Image (cartoon, rainbow, N blue to C red; front, side, top):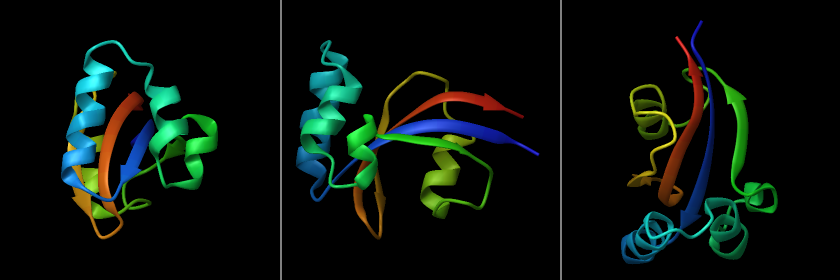
Length: 93
């Protein structure tokens, strides 16, 4: 069964999500940006979500996590929780 590890940043607006993505692409540290901005409890751990399989996260998340290139920030991804930046840190298909 496929498994992935990922980290994310959750914010309430698409504009904030885009602003943070630009900062990360410009060299800001993903983990620090997560700690400073993410509303998810995972922010304490730099946005790290650990390891999970298909179906363990909301479908919008799964669609990105199990298809996106490794170590490339994706987003904004809209879910019922808000807007996410996602980075897949490893995946085993």
